[in-house]
Length: 230
Image (tube, rainbow, N blue to C red; front, top):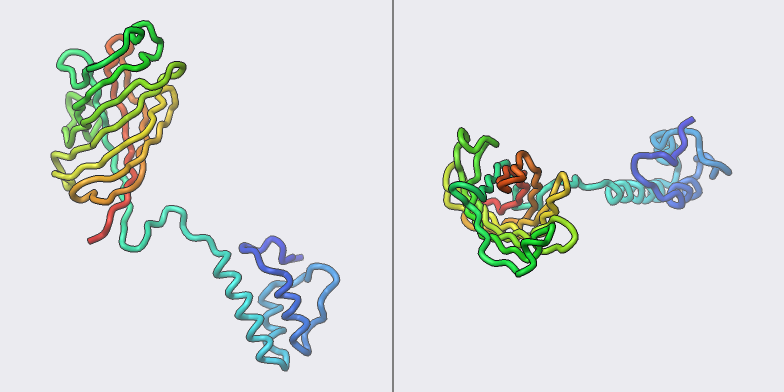
């Protein structure tokens, strides 16, 4: 038994029944769901004497199928292409520090979340997670602010500036909340320069390594960005 109900795309049953009733010589409208394939029904419609009505019904069904067909979720719009890049964000607060706290409130040091601390960074972006052996291909430059009293969250406003590789001289602008306690944190790409001009997309951050005593950290950033095709 092959009911029409679980067809891969929704079909308007009223139109199918109309095809039955407007095509002489075909099966009468069944009281229950028909027990044969749609192609069998189409064949019977085509065999009817009312070719104009049958053609109209076939066109209506084909239109419904096209409208119901879902578009690929990840397809980039015409004139754009989507890139997936991966870099490692090397945040160092100790030694030769690349991040410095430039402002804080009187209560920051007693806050469990360091609420109100403002940090400026110029962190290395590497191709691998090992800071000592991986090639530096860019810098993460900007600020992050501890903006939550109750949770470990920072507001990120930074640029990924590429200094090596195919995107040398270009940059991506990233903005959004970074919920540090989450395994995967997502932030928006709100623009860019050079090859990333008019860029839109998002990044996903995952912690790779953290030193609790120094706050040094290595974070993996997966970058999903759409750019205009020249």
